Image 1 (cartoon, rainbow, N blue to C red):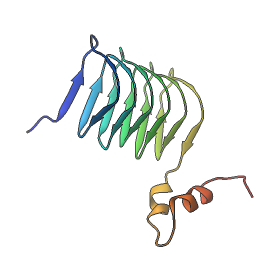
Image 2: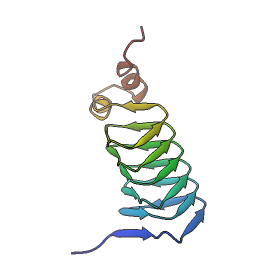
Image 3: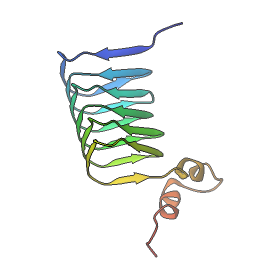
Image 4: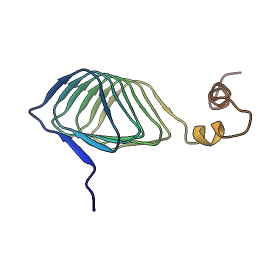
Length: 131
């Protein structure tokens, strides 16, 4: 079994953008954008300031910035998120702190795959309450 997980431990501080392919667990401090088609885990000791754009994310620590995930985002009991969140699926455990707006669109990916439909059209059909 190959282990494709990467770990940034609690004593690591990074300023700048991070890009990765498979799985990444961050338990240190990061200031900057995190981008991936992989899975991000924000550890309990982590403090992240910046945008997160990944396939899926699990947050145990503190994030100040917007999170955009293609699939699933989990905010665990000790998670603190100050920023907006976009996901297909969202799980928020009791005790988590979330200050911001959320956009959960489980059908967005399926809607975008319809022939002739552009992403902007899919967003329009997923906005309830607007004429």
